Image (cartoon, rainbow, N blue to C red; front, side):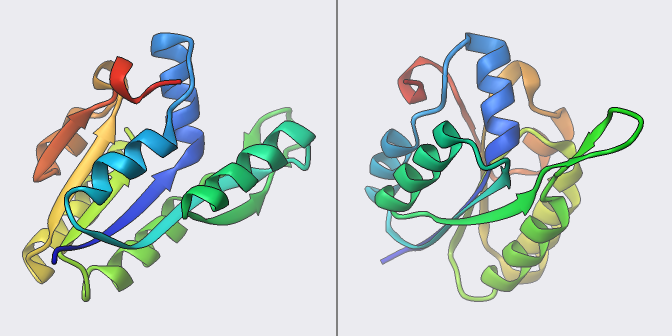
Length: 157
């Protein structure tokens, strides 16, 4: 059976689905869809921790579905900007998983991951699938993916 690992860039998916559709992504539907393709041996959701009640409920829902949740503190800089992306953490985890997995699924539209997908495809011969909002996913990421899945109505709440 095909071994699958899912890596969800929660902030990216939240903001892109909200911007494009005014709705939220349905992680439970994604899980059902992907589990038909093989065994999900690992699923990690990367999020920013603000500590509010809605966010804690969302994190619990992700855990109930089967995701492990990794949190990074939300940082507001003195100039008013904020920081809290997981690009390096996701990259490290994908590189480690690629050695034992048949398919890597990345939920993100961030073009910074294009080099990562090219690397794991060439070095580990894995399939690298991307789920993203078409209009808000970097072309370089779409091109680097083995398969690009459009996030549209069927994967929204």
